[in-house]
Image 1 (cartoon, rainbow, N blue to C red):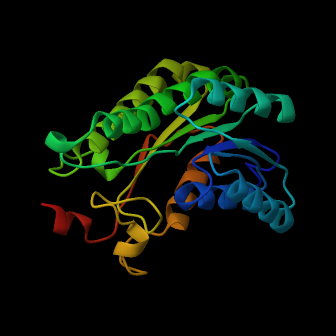
Image 2 (image 1 turned 90 degrees about the vertical axis):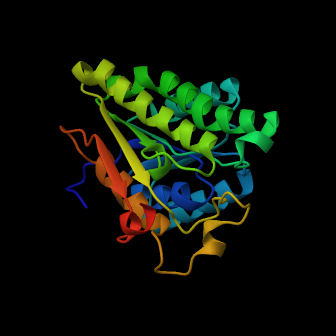
Image 3 (image 1 turned 45 degrees about the vertical axis):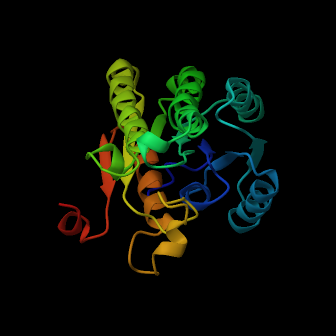
Length: 247
């Protein structure tokens, strides 16, 4: 992809156990980056880390992390710095969807989405900024098509992704003089274990070739992370007929 821009760099990926997160770990490792895998599923992370080391000869670190817990996120950043000496890339990928209809949504569903999609992104970004700043690194935020256009279904999830975009762009304004790259990547539907508004997964809903694959989004994330002097502000990843079907 690039001329060794990521070789030997250290990248943290949240939500690394499946889907876009796991695919991003693979593409980063393929470019020579040492990868810190963060999610709640330790067994899945460990298996993936073993594969990355065997296939690409990179170093990995598995840190079981619930991004909803501030202490977990702080420990993730601290253990990464202790192990690798710093942080070059943070990929804020962890996110989820719960419920859809506002009138019937439980407080627990609402709080779970807010704590994961909003609080978790804030905790990780806040803790990582000093270290990413030291290395002129990158903060990458996985947004969503839902965070760009109003939608009649799952408005709370959509609102959380609008927040991610607004937060990321404001962080970019705050850190621009510090040589920190900030990129928002907005996927539409991705064939993964991510749940749709009716509780099924996108992998169950869509056939291969109908929508984006996790690897396509991962390649975009890795491309953004590999920019050494520039910052790609926002990248959309949509199936080709997305706008024809959406309006």
